[in-house]
Length: 300
Image 1 (spheres, rainbow, N blue to C red):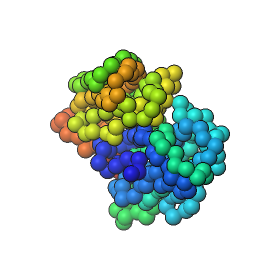
Image 2: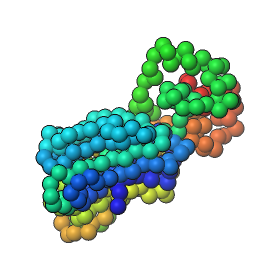
Image 3: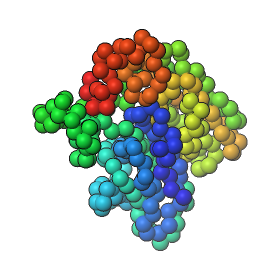
Image 4: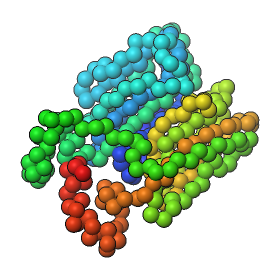
C-alpha cells in the first residue's frame, strides 16, 4: 500500500500543502512508496520529505518521464525524522517516490513522511512549466504580456503563510481518543492549519491525528512519523467553515500534540479563486477590478 495523497479528493482551496505521515514496510530492493498520477486539473509540487536515518536505504524520485530527478544515495546522512530534507519539484503528469533497501531483510515500520503542494495552474504557471495553452488562454497571455513578464523575472514562490493575520498555538495531553481542536471559521475569515507536531511514541500505529476541514477527511497522520514537539511539520490546510483535529488512540498511553493555525480575512480574490459565493457588493467589486480574468491569468 502506497503513502501517496489523493489530492483530487481532499483539495478544496488551492494552493494547499498536505503531508503524508505513514510508516512503510520495505522489502529488499526497490520499493515504490508513493505514486502520483491522474491528479488533473491540478499541478503538484513535491516539497520536501523526512526520513529516519538508515545506512541501508536510499531515496529517489522519477517524475514526468525522467528517472532519478532527485536522488539521495544514503539515508544514513539525513537530518532525521524531526527535520525536513528540503527540495521542490513540480510535477504535471506522474511521479514515483522510491526507497531502495540494500539489506537482505525487510525493514518493518520504517518512519518517513513527505509533503505535497497542490496548485490549480494559472495561465502564467502553465507558461512557466511549458504546458500548452488553449486558444483563449493564449489570447489572455498576450493581453497581459506574460511572455515578457516571465522573461524579466521568475515568479516568486507561493508563500504557504499568505493571507494569515494572526497565529494561535494549541497544545494537548491525551490518554485516550479525543478532540485536540474544533474550530469554526469566524464570519468573513478563513482558518489555516500550518503546523503539526507530537511527542513520538516508541512504535508505529499507536496513535493517529485525524484532520477534517469543511467536512473533508484528510489522510491520518501516524504520530510515529511526525516531528517531535521541539519542531513541527508545516502544511497549509484552509477552512472556511470548520476545522477539526482528533487524536485516535490505538494503544494506551499518554500522548502530547501541538498544532499551529492562523486566521485571516477571507478576501474577494480568494472567493473568486475558490468558486465561493459572492455577495452582490463583492461581485460588483470583482467585476470592476476584472478579478475573474486576473485570477485565471495569475496576475494581481
